[in-house]
Length: 111
Image (cartoon, rainbow, N blue to C red; front, side, top):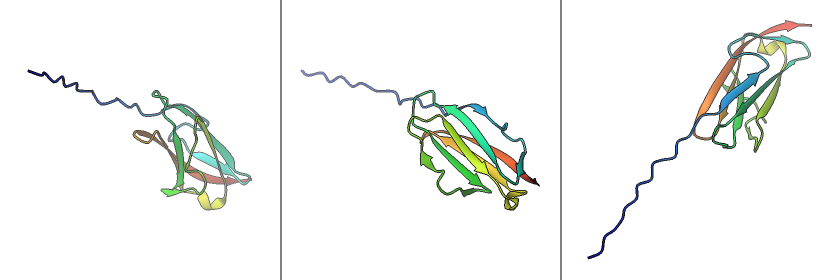
């Protein structure tokens, strides 16, 4: 008689990335001067997964920022222009499974 041993593996637990710091707190208004302003975030992934930083303005992805930042924990976006007055800048930080979302209303203040 042959006995078969069946091992059940529990699915791996994934944790969402964690925001460490942001140059502007989530939900705070960004005052945009004529020369623009850099918004920088630092995050890490508790599981060591590679993160993507996806910036958008009013839900439309910002060209060139949806890139995989292999090994990077920092992302910076420069927002500028009167056309962004009243718009919302958002950022999704994802490890491909879980994500965190941040957003900032923007006001153009000029000079």
